[in-house]
Structure formats: C-alpha cells, structure tokens
Length: 114
Length: 113
Image (cartoon, rainbow over all chains, first blue to last red; front, side):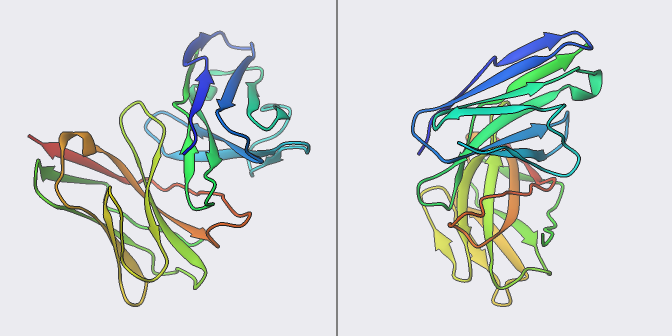
C-alpha cells in the first residue's frame, strides 16, 4: 500500500487568490492523479500527472486554472488559480498500487473560497 | 466509459450481512468491476475488484452475475465502521497503464447499531 499525505488539510481563501496543494507519497510512483469533489458530489478526475512530462487534463479542466507540478516520483502540487466560490471543494490526490489494480487516495484538502 | 447504476442509499443493522447492488448493463469484455468506499471525511479506499469470477478478500466479497451485467458487493457482517459511500466503478484493462477511475454517485450505506 501507499501512504499519501496532503497539505494543507483545509484552507479558507479569498476570491481571486491562488492556493497550492501539496501531495507527498511514501514511495516512488510514475503516475499521480488529482481529483475534485464538490460539496455533496462524487469525485471528478482533474488531471493525470506523470513525472517528467506535462500533466494530462480531463475535459473541463485547463492548465491555466489548475497548473500541476511533478518535480519527482514522490511529490506533486496542484494550484487552484484565481479562485471563485465555485472552486470550493475537496481536492484529492491518488496513486496506483504496485499491482496496478487499486488506487490509494490522500486524505484530501478541503478548500473554501469566500 | 460504461456506466454503472447504484441505489442512492441503503440501510443495514450492525452484525448483519449487507448486499450492495450495481448494474452495469453496457459493460464490455475488458472492463473490470471495482469497488471503492469513502468513509466520512476521508479519501476513497479500495475494497475489491473482479472480472468474471466471484472474489473474496478480507474486507468483502464480490459476486458477479454470469452475464456480467450486474454485480453485488457483500459485507458479511456490517459494523458501524462500514458506514460509507460505496462506489461501483468499471475500469478497462486492470493493470497496465489505464488507471483512470470514473466515479458515479455511489450508494450511501447507513449502519444502525
């Protein structure tokens, strides 16, 4: 299994500002995923971040709004830029397990934009 | 991606078995059936997955219909800790490079003491 930590665990931010969320994994992984979970909703994949290449974004998500860095095999950041109240969500990172069958998720970052 | 249909909510009593259904009538031959659950204020956790045969692990059992158009996650003895949202997800080609998970709304399981 993989142990994933995220920072911050929660934050309250003002409209128009940006927040960078960190995701740290206790083992080296090629792929990392970023998800968004809006209030009362299910998870939606934002992007896939491979080390050494540009992140791949899902439909409806763009790099200018959600830039991602992947500097090494155990770390990634997701920035939520120019925030609006609609960005209030839980943001989660995940990694695949070594068997390739399961994914492990971080505890999430709860973001509130006022 | 093929779609899954789950009841919005189910209720169970502690220490009793729970059968969580999932319909996936448009499943393709290469789709694996995965189950995850999300406990309150936590990220999802993997429960079990299967392709055609029934599967058991320490957390649960997965019963897959012969035509693969439906499956059932079985918790043999529900505990209060099993109260969570349970997601049934189809994932093409388990393993390899296709790890993308598409979450539906899931089933909110309430366990009564």
